[in-house]
Each structure stands twice: as C-alpha cells, then as structure tokens.
Amino acid sequence: MERPANFRMIRLGRELRGLTQTDVARKGGPSQVRLSRMETGQANASSDDIASLSNVLRLPPPFFHEPGAPAAVPLFRKRAIRSARTLSTIHARLNTAVLIAQRLLDAGVNVELTQFFPEPGDFAPDDPRVAADALRRDWRLPIGRVDNVTALIESAAGIVLRVDFGSVDASAAFIGMQGDEARLWFLINTREEAGDRVRLSLAHELGHAVLHRRLAAIEETETELQAFTFASALLMPSSEFDRAIPFDALTLSDARRLKETFGVSIQAIIRAAYERGRISRARYTSLFKQLSARQWRTYEPDPLPVEMPSIWPEVLRVHREQHGFSDADLAEVARVDEPTLGDLFPDSFRRRPRLEAVSISSTRGG
Image 1 (cartoon, one colour):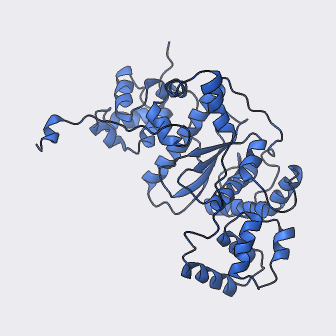
Image 2 (tube, rainbow, N blue to C red; image 1 turned 180 degrees about the vertical axis):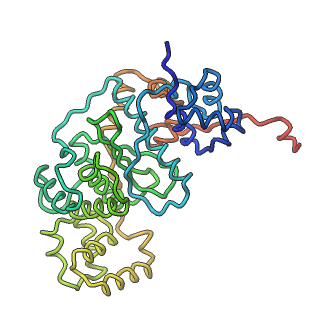
Image 3 (tube, rainbow, N blue to C red; image 1 turned 90 degrees about the vertical axis):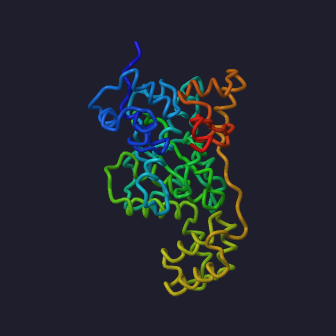
C-alpha cells in the first residue's frame, strides 16, 4: 500500500515551479483553499489531488510521497534578494537537487572517507579565524594557497553539486539535510562563471558547515560575516598574506598579483587587507574606485578556471556504465522527470524543452 502524500513535498513541488497556490488552481490543480490546507498538513491529498498536481507541476506522483522532512533552509552566499518568491524558488530548487542526489547515491553507490568534518560545536562561530587555522592543521594543508577547494571538501566526503539555482542572485549554498547527518551538501550555481568567486563561495559554505551546522538560528548578517571571515582566513592565511602587504601600501597591481598567489578575486584581497588592518579606509576606498574605473567590479582580469567536482560525476558514471541506467531510469529512481534533471543539473543531463498544450482557439487569435 502506497504511503500517504507528504504535505511538505506538495509545497516543495509547487515552489520548484515558481507557482503560487492560486497559479496552481488556475492551471487545473486543487483549489487555492484546499491546496493551502494540504500544504500545511490540515487535509490529506487524495489520489485525484495528486494526479492533478502531477499534471500541473510536471512531476510524477511518487515525487509527492517522499518520506521525511525535505525542507532544509540553505545557508548560502547571496546577493540582495528582494523577492520572497524568488527566494522560495531558489530554496526549492536546492532542496530538490539534494533529494535527487540522495536518491541516486542511495541506489548502490558508496563514497569513501579519507578525512572527517569537525563535529558540530567543535569551533565557536564567533572565532572563525581560529576555526580556519585549526582546520588547516587538522586537514594537513600545505602552507599558502589551497590548490583546489572542491577537492578539499570532497576529501571529507562533502558532496559538491553544480546546480542551476534559477537565478544569479546566489552563488553557492550549504545544506545539512535532516535525517541524513552523514552527508553534507555544497551547491554551486552553474550561472556563476568566475572561478575565483566559486573558490571563495565554496570556502564560505565550508565555513557554514564548520561553524553553523545544527546551530540554533542567529542573525543572518552575523552568520554570513563569520562564514566570510572563515573563508578569508582559510584561503588567505595571515602568516603569508599579511607579510605580502606592507602596511597601507597595497596597490591594484599588487592585488592583481596576489590573486594568482591565493586564487581569490582582487576584490576579496582588498577587503581582507582592510578587515585585517593592513590598509586604511582611505586606501580601501581608493582601490575600489580604481576597480570601478577599470570596470573590474564585474569582470576581473586574469580569470581563474572554475573548479569541477568529481564525486557527483562519478556517481552518474557508475549508474550509466556499470548499472546500465539510462537518463529515463535515473529520473525514475530520483522520482522526477527527465526535463527536471536537465533543468537542475545542466552539466550532467541534457536540457529538454517542455511542450505544453495550448487551446486551438488561442492559436487562431480568438
């Protein structure tokens, strides 16, 4: 006997498609009032409800019967997102991507650990530099540059996924899913093309994993600053970075040279120099004005290649080559359709156009 529909999955599916409850009702789904009651667990979804939701949201019925609580709130490096609807859609896309990856990992693929993430609470969130220095020691990182942040995270079995966030308003995210404590998920937006920003964003999310995992909610501005400070200390350790910057004498050409040395953006170097007291506020402001004059705030010179994960592509390779799975098979295991796989994971699956029926009268102009 099939388990009842999970009310959280109903809401997740709707937000994945960027629709309001009223939108769903207008497209032939349950009424707005009934859908609201289903999404809050006040009413059980009938088989007819699920059939109509499956049709409107373009998701197979098994998607809505996923057990558990797939509603983790990502900790992520984002720009100012003013639209609550955009934010909820990003959240839904990230949670769905992680659910898909969970299902495919659970379908006969093992990931071996070579080192381990710190336990929650090992490091105080209000001392991120100490945490970064300790992690460098515990994970035996060489002095200076972190060669590959993605490989570093994957060495502790952190799963790095390249996902289309559906927006350029966020670069990366960290998710620790309830009921899956063994896996930590790091998501990079496929729309982010700057390799230096990807490295800093991943280090930022690593900061969230080390400092804020299972931590009671605190002010977002505070957690974001702590994560950035952690990332800065990890990628630009003070023992080498501070020595490379004579007091209040940093120039734009110096920062450009240090970009190659540490693998972070010129802007990150200037910000770190200011926050560590190596340059004055006046020089900091002057350097950013020079960046703007050269139009380097958006596109910096000397671009770095984007780091690519290895665990997720290997999972798909094992399924395709050893298990003989087609993309249709993978979609069935993941409880979504093939276009959703291509939409969320454009690096790994072919994007497929969605065709929707339109009325004949509308094609004739009335």
